Image (cartoon, rainbow, N blue to C red; front, side, top):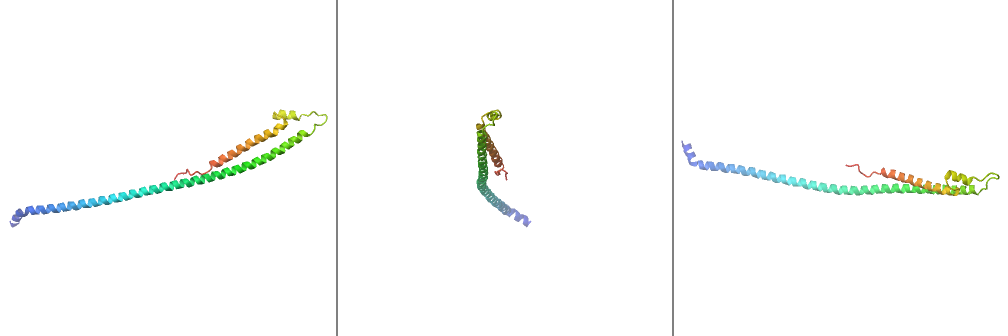
Length: 171
């Protein structure tokens, strides 16, 4: 009976004490959740900052790599152009030599007199075969050879340029 009497007399204090304990526990839980949220926010911000930094570094590296690739491709293309130009110049020189020899032979051919008793048919032969005079044949052949040499050099240059690695392989 005394315990009931004590309980009826002090029940307010007991309930108040339990309420204070529950509020303390609740405040402890809220504090823990707040600290966890702060830690998560800090970790998230750090991860974001790291991602931004990595992206910026990757962009700088990509720009540098692109510049280096442009330099490499330009050097390769310049080397090809120089080689094809040199080969073309050598071909033109050889063609000029052949032209001068052909012109000399033509002049010699036309300067010999016709055989006695045989009609001179040289100009007629040139006109029938080439459609022009004998003196005009070497320049026509030279022009045709020059055009052919230019086309061959251009095709060689084009094929070589197409084989230059421009770095479009991707990552």
